[in-house]
Image (tube, rainbow, N blue to C red; front, side, top):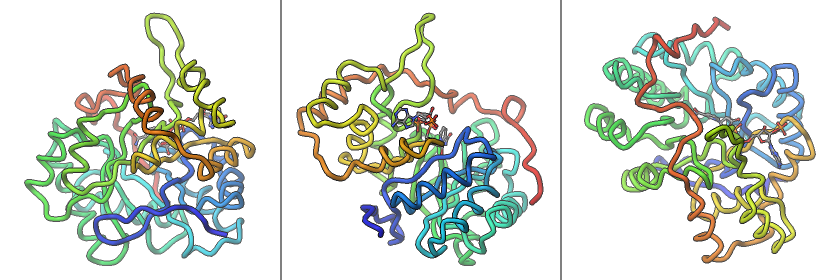
Length: 295
Ligand code: NAP
């Protein structure tokens, strides 16, 4: 069974639009979550070297019995492994932990704005891995418009994907527009607003937003399903995370209803313009550097 709608990347590779995210999935729970997702029909998993659970992602895929060729594996190179040779080696580490020869989509996890030279060297290594057939597509994450412009000026392959924080409370329309202008697919992280919001002492969750609850009730769906549908209908890839099977299944039940244009607009209007995650411009090796273990 594989009914997942696909997105076509700018090099022709097809990527299932919805994937399972595994950020903060404890390694001990990750293989079971991946297995549950593949059983539910997912064919795409998004992990990262820095999440410390690539090994368990590979294990979950193998345990599921789904053929490797049917699963789209996406992972990320952490900033501590930026640099041409270091990034080539980062591929070896991730591939060995995942237990695969080829990675479907390998992306730079962040730009290093204060060391953009290292960011470019890392990206050139991704281009080499693509040329050598070790990855099927390459991309970036948390790249703002300036970062994309600077990268494109110095490299030859346009990233296939830019994975950015994107949910109703933080839409980044300018970055999404920049992606579209360059033929880059925008992939939403925290697509159901999972990143925790603490604003003036108040905890806010998009999952409890009254507007989303109302729209969800209209369709007999949940707010999480509405947010995922909103992302998919606007052409994005979405990668919700859960380690609970019932939510993993719930998050995949998003292909049997349609939001109206008005509903999409109402959800767009929830944007606060305030990010939940770290400011991409402020990422440095000093503040975020952490060694990625060998396989
Ligand atoms: P998310 O997917 O928006 O939300 C995940 C949170 O929502 C978890 O606490 C999960 O809890 C809960 N949840 C999941 N499904 C639910 C449902 N149907 N109803 C209610 N609660 C639900 O947030 P995220 O994990 O931050 O982002 C998703 C993925 O994006 C990550 O896993 C990772 O792959 C990627 N990501 C990338 C970056 C980056 O810098 N590139 C940053 C953050 C995330 P349970 O697990 O307990 O169900």
